[in-house]
Length: 154
Image (cartoon, rainbow, N blue to C red; front, top):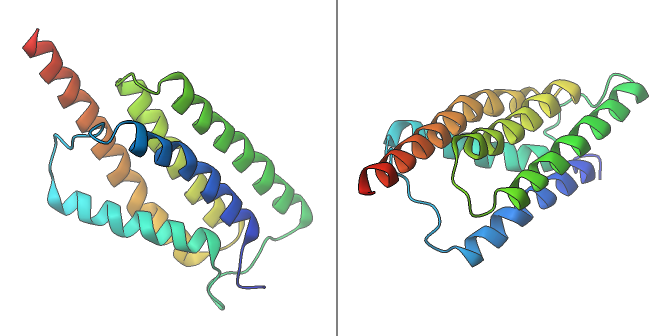
């Protein structure tokens, strides 16, 4: 079980719940208006890398937490971030705004980077650094372009 991070699995499951609910309730709810294929590819590589590396620890590239306090900080900060993420999903469920797009992209990016740093997971940190700017940029561009299209259609 030393290769499985049960806490990372828990955080990933909680983060995925609002995304799954959104996918079922709004099957046409996300339109990728920006369409930058290179950035999208890097984002997907980073996304799936973060998902896997939050849950599974690669020997010799993951060094656990430096102290019990560091582990406690990891749990507290990630718990607060996951709660914030879920609250933003609930509050802004059907509203497309730049704030929602940025919040829902920055929070998981922060969780992945913070988790990589705190757990000394080299590969998690690397894929999180790839994921974060790509995910934030795609979310921002799509929110701005979608809002711009709605404004022009009025």
